[in-house]
Image (cartoon, one colour):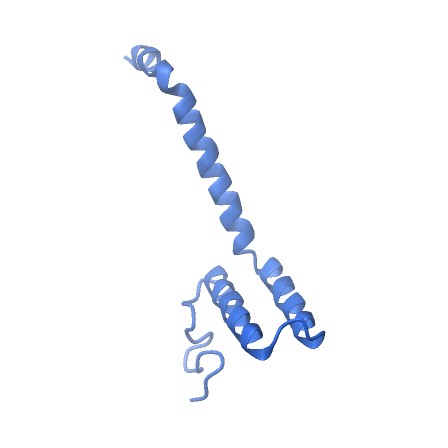
Length: 94
């Protein structure tokens, strides 16, 4: 039965292979996107852009929030949620 199944599914093998490749590409892209070291590097670069005057405070705050949300997800925390129980979300006071 297994051999018959493989023979019958042979014409769709390129589609199945393409699907596997796409899943691998998506998995690697997500791994890189949520890599804490890469996010921290982006945060440092963002701070340099602010210090050099290439971006204003509003742009810095917006992009920093996005990066901190990604970092929270990478660390298994809820975005904009407390990093430590009982601690206020970033940018807010209790």
